[in-house]
Image (cartoon, rainbow, N blue to C red; front, side, top):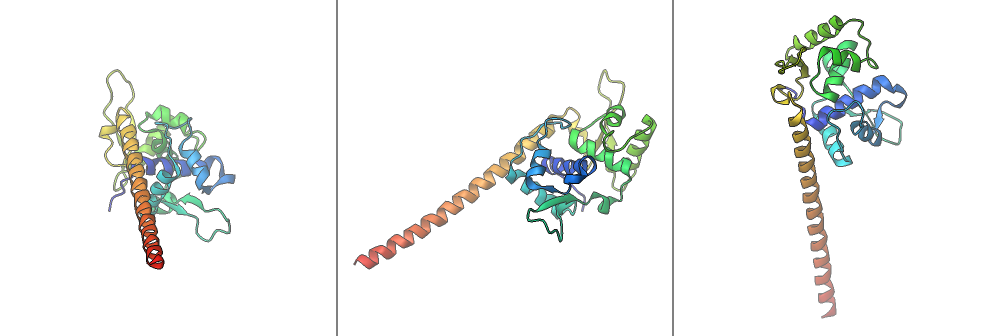
Length: 217
């Protein structure tokens, strides 16, 4: 079954990969640290404001795909989370760095990727970036693709395919929309849970009131 991440799951996965490489002393990440990593204002496009429920839902989806989840057998009192991309795909360091930045920042040119992956993996030449992208594109199924060149631009951009075909994300707006839709679904689910809890509480109070009436008779 092909992997199809929503925008929140992609952000969580990218944040876990990034923090493993850039701040290994704090990795795996607690839930609070992961929320902060997802909502960073730098090195993120688009900037998100995910709450705990959204991140928990995203982690649940990633765990179903065996891409991330809680650390097994940890002594820590606080649950911590890690990705398992390496176990699933056996990436090279260059492939993992490129995919990470594509997950965090959307479609980019090889030049942009070379500069933005520097903290994760140093590409000596632009050709090394292009070679890494080619390896991602040649996987089965492909994990990246080249997008049609936009008018007035010299370089084509590349996008990851873990969220499905990237044709529709060329201008970045659908990513924003999908995040908003996902957050709205999470809010609605929370409201439904709250309503169900209130109904249960109401039924309990109703039963207690009936018992009191019977006792007073």
